Amino acid sequence: MVHQYKLNGYNIVLDTCSGGVHVVDDVTYDIISEFEKQSEDQLLSQISQKYPEVGEQEIKECYDQVSALKESGELFTPDTFEGMADKLKQKTAGVIKALCLHVAHTCNLNCSYCFASQGKYHGERAIMSLEVGKRALDFLVENSGTRHNLEVDFFGGEPLMNFGMIKDLVAYARELEKKHNKNFRFTLTTNGVLIDDDVIDFANREMSNVVLSLDGRKEIHDKYRVDYAGKGSWERIVPKFQELVDKRGGKNYYMRGTFTHSNPDFLEDIKVMLDLGFNELSMEPVVCAKGDAEELTEEDFPIVCKQYEDLAALMIEKHKENKDFTFYHYMIDLKSGPCIYKRISGCGSGTEYMAVTPWGDLYPCHQFVGEDKYKLGDIYNGVTNKGAQEEFASCNVYARPDCKDCWAKLYCSGGCAANAYHATGSVRGVYEYGCRLFRKRMECAIMVAVAKALEE
Amino acid sequence: MEHIKTIKTANLCESAKNGGCGECQTSCQSACKTSCGIANQQCENNNK
Image 1 (cartoon, one colour):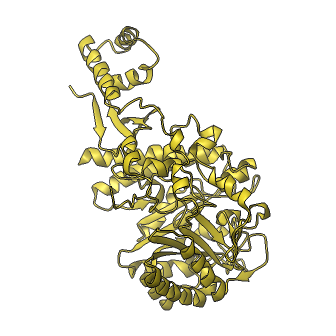
Image 2 (cartoon, chains in turn green, brown):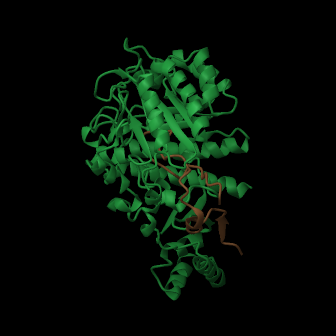
Image 3 (cartoon, each protein chain N blue to C red):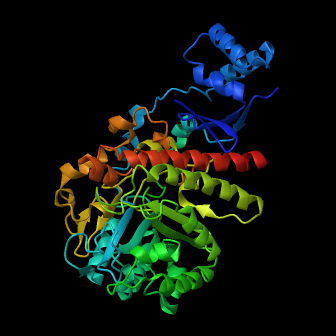
């Protein structure tokens, strides 16, 4: 499958099944778009009429170069991967490699757009005990097979409301690592309110990654990210985030924001993050119920797309000044990204990745917590709801009819099951608005990679 | 004359030969938590 687009002065051609990326001139661009539809004579004559200033010999040259790429398997590569779609999952069946630990179903902020309804996930407030946490890690180790790297995310609500337990649990994990020859990679996702010297010291020593929630501009952030008295949190958390990042010593972090109908012009928020000294950034479209005031609208769509394009241009500009920054969705390694098995296997929720509630129930992922029919089991008895797990296990790129002809399917792996479920009622559906944004992001991400590659 | 510049990329068909070790990060872990993408992930296969 071939996808062509023009962006920032580049004519880009993606051969999605081989992973090929080509930059072509205008004549070749037009030849490629008709190459599979017309005979050589027809196409050469049509192109000659469109480009009278270009000689016939040169047009033939373009045609021959396109033919050569097809011959060498770099263009018009057929999709022959469908039969492999469940191979990786079969091979690793029963192996769990990541848990999202909901250590606190409570929060010290009261953000109106929170998909977890202020951390309660539509249930009661709760805190995970050390005993449950230890059992969750034991469960992970027991089910991890030969896999060495295990990922654990401290999530909430606000996980720092249970900081003492997190510290004790990480100490326990370090013992488990030695005993079972495993390597835990921990992540902490926090709103920053409770960050102090002790947290900074611990997070920078023990967490492979920290995800820091900041929406950018103060007025945007403080509109949603307020405490229970209705007071904005921006001024309280920004200096703490700066200190944490400053002392992080180059270890990974993400400054992660959410944009909504209030700020489809989110590039302004990214610029604020950059001005504050942060350079590992992520800005995500809001996930909310249909009809919410925060929901992104059709009118927002072109504005959001413009932000993605301008952000890409800004990244190239900063790169030239040796002031690089990263944007989560534009991090693409064309030379050594994920293999084809990974690309077609789906996101792994419910099989290799699960969320654990404060009382030890298992769900396919953090976004399904509270959806009773998707409760998979618990950390004491393992997965008992085999039917629900099978629904997720069989979710791959080829299981979603809407993905069949999408050029981006090998970049998204079929998309987010939770978004699909909330948009269509089925984990095998697609969240069309999210797909359109994803495709735009990939076009921009690849364009940035192209610009950097051509500079080398 | 060169009309096509091919950017150096990993060949996905080739990756079928030694791929599928499963050591890579889960797709949603760590950064975004609200959407899925795999293009930005690292390959962690040590036996390529």
